[in-house]
Structure formats: structure tokens, C-alpha cells
Image 1: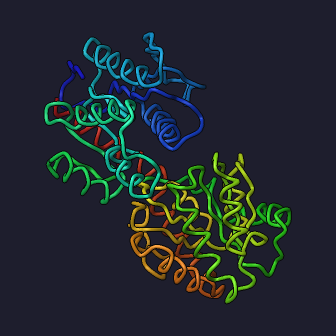
Image 2: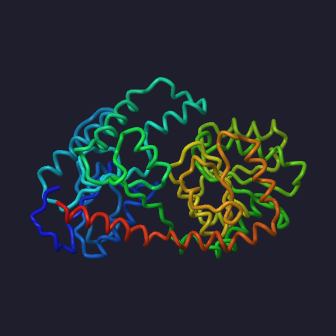
Length: 387
């Protein structure tokens, strides 16, 4: 956050902060893509973290800040405090915070507002009514991160989150930049449908079946209970419809029992966690994510890139990209099972699904990873030149 360079700089000393660097996870993937892209562009990139995996690029480097702390909550607070001390004593042109820290030039809220997440989960009956100490600390960090004197710009990944941040924290609209998530259009591609055929057979699905895909680890937040109810409601009208559930949850058995109680257990296959989600998209005809809160679910674009129409809710920022009936459908969460069931019925028409496939792929290509990295680089450069 210090700079001795002039406004003509074309390369920057950039600090990216996130407590956890790894090869998995939405924010972690974004961090790796961004760090590699910025290094390729000639920038000097430092990743400040508490622990890390392999370098995303040979020219990037890690700085590890690991103050002693006994619990996860105190580790979160200690890391934020250590980041504050580090960036104050180090000369960077621009600091981008990707996690729960409060001292940066630019903060990216990839997970949206923690306050909003807690409220949605409380409404969903997930037992979030009384705040845990960990949540109180996270909310304190969020409030400090968005204070007027803390950062110059806020990156959000949907208009939904922008509206939320303005309303909750009174952040001026001009300080907020909406940069939608991007997708690796080579990794997620219609050609994986051939690879998905093996998984389809292993799941016991026939070639004539229409396969709906649900992918996510947090079943409650992602709305699997809503999908099972809507799926069961369509069972009689669409006997060839099947549901593949990919991902894991500690309550998995309860959801399996729910499917059985609804009378559709034999038509629902719980696959568990898979290492290559791109192949799982290749199994399906339609992707369904009736999420209760997702600032922008990456799986939205991954499915579109594979050529799948997407059914999701208005609580998924990724749904903002979808044109109703063209690349999928966006249902109102408050309308619940009724609206979701109607969407499943609409997309049970395979001729409609096949027509939407090309439009889905085309939309994803417009939101490829490279374009989002370019947008982020431009924003960082504008902030660095203004200091």
C-alpha cells in the first residue's frame, strides 16, 4: 500500500492476500488464475497467506504469516492483524484482499456478505439464529474491510451482492466494481459429454433417460431438499427423468431417506465427491442448483460451458447472466417447490434442451477466465496509478 512509482507505471508490485492458498476451492482457484495471469503480464506478484500449496507461477512468491493462535477463529483474526502489519511495512503498488482481512487497497467479496449469508441460513432453518464467536469475528472483519477509510475499491461478482453491500454498509456505488466470475472454457467443454457417458452407465441411467445434475457439498444451502421435492412432483409426468447428486454432506443419509420417503429414491443416485466435475457435467442434460444463497455459484458457468441449460434461483448471482428460456431458468426462491417443479417440467422437453445447449456454451464463452483477469488487472492498475 506504499508506492514510490509514478502514474505511468505499466507493471506493478502486487500483493494478494488470502489465509488459505490451495488447489481447490472457488476463491483459491481465482487466486491461482489471477496470480498466474499477472505474472505472465510481467507484474511482481506476492501471495501472502498462512499456509500454501504449489506456486501458481514460477515468478510468483509466497510470504507466510503464521502467528500463534489456538483456535480457527483466533487464527482468522491473527492473520488479518498480521496482514495489516505486513502491508504497512512493505512497499506494494496495490494490495488485493481475497479473504477476511481489513487492510487493502482493493477487497474482493467472492463470498458476498457474511452477514447476508447468516441471515439466509437462519431463514432456511439451519440453526444460525444465535451468532457463534467465529461469526462475530468474521462480521467485525467485514465491517472494517468495507469502512470508508480502509479500501479504495470493492470487487463483487454480481449485481445482487452490489445491492447488498450498498444497503448494508452504505458503500458508495462508484467504489464498487462488478466483475462476474469467469470459467475455464477448455476444461469445461461439451466434448466431456463423451467422458460422462461412462459415469452415466455406472449410475444405472439408460441412454433414453433425462438426467438432472445437482453438484454441491452443502446440501441445505444449495437447496437439495427443494430439488428432491420438486423432482418427486414430476415423477409421474416424466418417468424417464433421473437425478444425479454429486458432492458430499454430513447429512447425506437424511437426504437419501428423504428421497425414499418421497417415492423417488430409485431414480436418484448419490455419487459423492468426484475429482473431475467437468466429467460430471458431461453426464447430465440439465443442471439444477436451487441455492438459498450463492453470490455467484461457479458451477453455473461450468454447466453452461459444458452446454447444459441451468435452472437456479434468484439468490444465485450467476443467474443474472441467464436469459429466461434461452440458456435456462431462474426461479424465485420464495416461490419454493412450486416454481422449481414448473421449471423442471418446462425443461423436460429434450428438443428445448438441445436448442439451449449452443446458447449456453456461447454465453459461457463470453465470460471466460481470461476476460475476467483482464478486467481485474485494469482495475488494479487504475488504483495503483491513483496512489
